[in-house]
Amino acid sequence: MHNHTISKLDDLITTLIDSVKGYAHSAEKATSVPFETLFRDLAAERQAAVTLLQERSRQLDGKPNEFGSAAGTVHRWIEDIHVALGGGDKAIIQAIDRGEDYLNEEFERVLRDDAIDAETQSIVRRAHESVRHGLTLVDQLKQQVAA
Image (cartoon, rainbow, N blue to C red):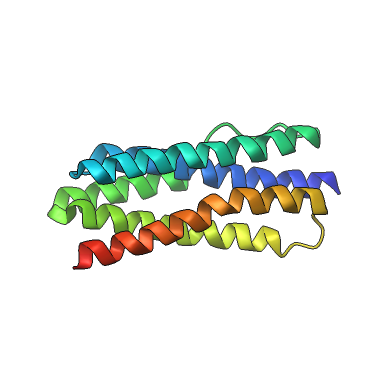
């Protein structure tokens, strides 16, 4: 039973690490200082969620991932291309939006998994708060750049 839970935690950890790297990358590409600051703050918030899930994995005798995925790297390259083609902050926000939607789906899938114990579910819910916060902020940013 712990193996299944550890596996699911590791999937979330990997995706969250991609998110940390993605926000840090977006901060570097942002042309607006407020966006740069916001993206750095969100990267730090996501790192806290990574740490939370890594600690739970270790409590269950897991060896949590410390690296993101190849898919996350590709996602950042695509963002670079859109920015280079003149998309600016709008392209960055669109890339973040796609990543946030994917991350939210991954969390919701784990939260619906009845094979994961209540304590782990509680910890996953706490980490998911960062994702929900990110979704709200990205929706606000989309409206802002559309105006």
